[in-house]
Length: 400
Image (tube, rainbow, N blue to C red; front, side, top):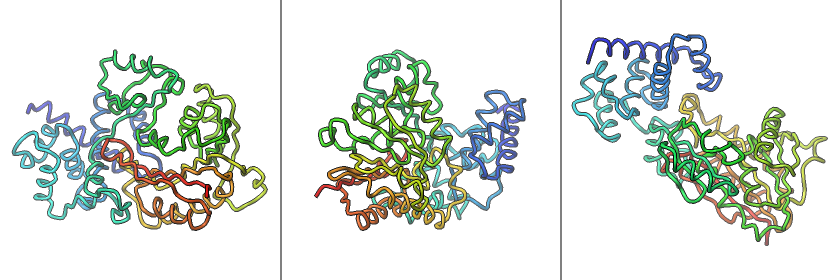
């Protein structure tokens, strides 16, 4: 390896150390990193890419190797996560690379031989709390891999977008007629207009539509309430599935609703109502705004987000059982306000992007015990097997 290459590697490592040593966790890491690079314009595009990758690789170690020096942790993370870690590791720890091209299991074994305290099970926090249907070993290892970017083609424009993707030189994988997997960070602007022609939406999030009742089971113009609408992805999904739906979207955050309205404008969704409702609050003057007689309630509730931490590995740093308990309490408060909105013969779909049982199967038990609704289907959506998010979804009905 040339002296110049060694200097560049050392500089990238020092920069990654600087970034990570000053990151407090008070804001999402991508925002902090963007601010850091804006304040240090000396970094070129390749430098930014390499430093970012080193930081993310370090985060992917989760709770493991917590006590080793930061520089060593960065190199270890890169050794496990990078497609080709040879150059950096050879410059720092050549004894880790007796051969090139070793698989993940071999890398894990080699790291364990140099750090006797290293245990892959420590990567993901509170792994003993995972939903029972999750393969713990496969799930934990998935956090060492960068997930893909997924888009959902909207039915009306799907053929044109598929052609644009097929004609491009961008690596892609079609999944059924409407889903596409792309490398993370892909510029999708050449495929069409976002939200109008396609929606950037994780594969598991798209698959929640498989749990929505068949349109034939709802009235011709069903009332659908997206109770925790967020950015509106599930609302657009429901609108595409139920073309004559009367849609109500609510969220506790005014700014989120403003962004959602702009997104709906681009998506061509006009006939809907939007309202600000904080469903975690006790019944108050807002009670008259809680709808009744809804044919389908979509409750994609606030949660730990633990099923998305392969995308946001910095989130694994500070998690304890109290955090899970706090989210569980919020979920119970929200669902207690939603139960009575379901029309006779109607449906409720409960969704989280959590991998923890308490927020998933535990909440199914709570809903059934408190509401009179009965679960028809429930499942962990195992995104960890497909480089996507892991989610949970359950469909309830008020039908006898």
